[in-house]
Image 1 (tube, rainbow, N blue to C red):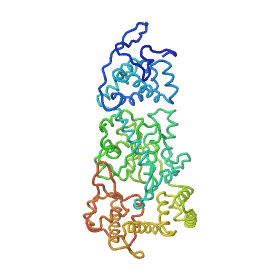
Image 2 (cartoon, rainbow, N blue to C red):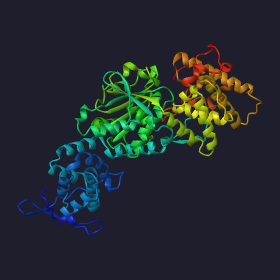
Image 3 (cartoon, one colour):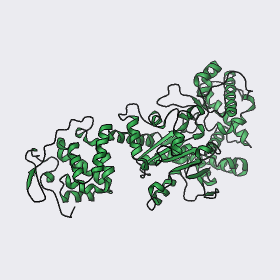
Length: 538
């Protein structure tokens, strides 16, 4: 459109001004001849302000983008109005959305989808018109926007803090304080792992990719990323931080991010999105959302946490490995985490491979000082103790171990053991001691009451069997059947977590990450031999 060129007719009207009837509206053709504007049919779509037309705006602004001025001209906007919209927005998508909102405000009930599609067609944006016809038949692009809003709300609120130890109800830490500045290594083309100086979080991987993507074909860019690390090193919370970063606008290259915990997965990825992430009253259907994902693959990220925790039973009924390997949604971005040397065959087609190796010693010290911010003397003594104990100093670079060391130091009157095995035994003792105190259970010395001892023996048996079977989840009903009176103590002590999802009312009990590294060193006083009824996997 030539500069200074405008449209005649009703384009100069502003919100709140007297609107002429449609029979009075006229516009000029190229030869200057005036002719009446077609009277649009009144809009009767319901559910959203503006007669429901707003639910198409997200789809239109994503597709029109830099051609918004052409659309503005055919919606009868004057050049001065176009210049105002241009100046008050930072990018073309924002300008297009502003244009649509302004058009709706000016025209009210006369702002129908038919008028909008006619303007798009006149602006030679027929592909957008065809897309609108498709989504009208499938329904509700606006509902897809509701999904994105729900995801951002979930990640911004539920994922802003982490409670790493279930038995410590008051230990609810800001996410950034626990898993920041992790050390990552990247595998090069020769298969060697090298330190990454600029990448200290998973979000940095995509910030680097965002800069590179300006110079390469988006379809040839890295899309499947594999991240490995031992238990407690920060894989899950790094994924949580990545989703949280997207919700706060730090990963603008993605329109939608789906963070799925694979230990919950029991069916298709499509169904898992609704089961794990969305409320039950969403208007959009799984098929409609899946169609949106298929049409926007370049702009969608799947964060798949814990492939090694996906049970063999679940593997038979899910398409998540197909997603990872690019057999479905091949142009979507996927980041998948796993423990080292697990699921190697499933992950061999990933384009990039990173390892999380934990904190630096400086980061470990920083966390200790934050944890004991109200008692800095305790922090100083713990730092000195770790410096003199190379064994504990080395395991403190694992973020979860670092938290456990702080808790044990606090609970034991500023004492720490000499070995990792003794540390884990002290943790179990600390958990049981806290549980007794919370429930008013009295005991003398280090001898727990018989019911607590029996619960600990049951947990030891569960952990031992899980170690041999490589099993992390157990049915609550099976635990109750086998352990009877002691089952409640076992489930509530804090050494098992309950995994809840929207679709599961009988949530399984899971051996959490702080148990997995040391279940083989379970205290001898509560370890038992394999016998009796098997605990079945969910």
